[in-house]
Image (tube, rainbow over all chains, first blue to last red; front, side, top):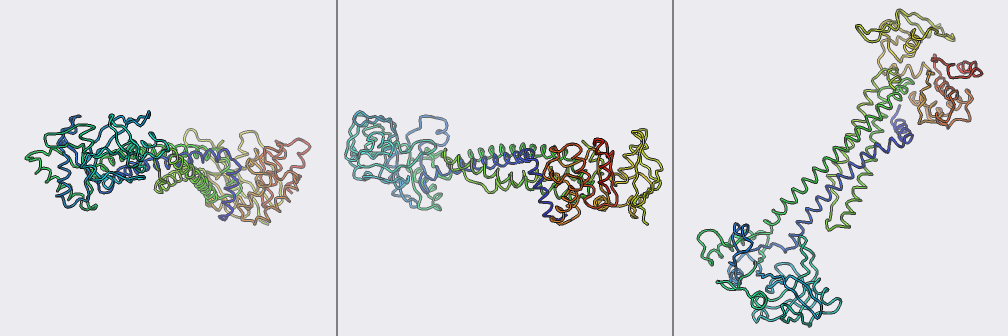
Length: 405
Length: 188
């Protein structure tokens, strides 16, 4: 019997018992679809998290007040970093591009009868460069305005919409802590950072912030929440970290432990990488389990259907089929079921991924490895358990197989 | 002239030790071409076992068996399949039609394994089914046919490959008395 005959025969048999065929395929479909979706979502989560840190700005470093230990122990962090530190970094550290000290607070801001509880960032004009923010309308504040402690404000995209709707806010006045500020610009939408809306924010000169909003000073000068620094390029990140550490130790006259911490984007990425790595591992484990369960399902239905067909095998042998003919037919049947189930399962998995991408911020990607692995494993199981028992049955004397039922 | 069946000292035992069952002991049988032969006996006397040995569905424990001049008692599995395909036509007691195939497809099946071309397969199957009076039931599935019709499909399947030997296990069991005599006519 030639190959085409075997294929025809397999197709006839499969279409002749649609329920059995579709049940067999169902196991393969579910196994494939779940694995592909799960791995896709896991990778999406990983990409999302690292994308978030990349949105902080290119080659960015953060100088934070307090040592690593004290930051972990205390909620009230010592105010060891000052505006002067930031200026010194800008003037004396060669490997850096720009420095933006930041002083943060959360306040109620009002415009007419509209109000918004919004995060307020006091900074310098370099902020837009360092943190990769763009001004959409109007302008950001200037160094002169920082020196003069002018009461000017740049609104985040969401805050602008909340207070002004579609109207143009530029030139209007808003009140922060009952002090009037003139709106000079609106930022471009930036999106959320780890669930924190970066567009519901306003930006004012750091000097104005210190003197009029938080009224906070330290023995060393104007203290800041943290300092964002951009290194010249990716290669100078560690140089910048080293130089800044030396400079700050010198300035703070430190002999023992540092009273500040420098975090690079890479550090942050590593921490997040650990978390998302664990997440992906978990998802992979779940996917592995579903593949395993799916495999057992495929195995069961295959075993049962071959057992059920022992009589058919006996009859085919009785009228002249050889062991090879029987084997070939079952192999082709198993291949058709596995391939078809694999394709449908992959299609559903890819569909599921598209759905997740559409309704959540996770940009889940289709993983070729996952598809190959899922289709390979389920197909392999389908093939083995579809063919191995059939082979056993084909070896029987026809009369034994015929009488098996 | 060549004998069709020549059984010499055939024995068949099932199991071993205390549970050993001797189904056949020293069976000798010669059947000439064109001969019509019935094996009769009480239930459990080994009729079916003889049939199965003759039909190469089962191997004898000892003795030799020449089918159409070929010693089949020592043939490997693949060659036996070939013998069953070309030399023997079976009509099983329970017919053993494949339920998912139509009457025509069931009759075509032996020729599929014989490597007959599709066109000839169809032509010969239609011819065989016409001979047993089922020309108008070609595309019915077995469950859409009566017991007698199913048996006639089984007969058509047995004769379609033009075997030298046709074996029928209790062939009249499922037929009403009117069809009894006709059942045998189909074999000629």
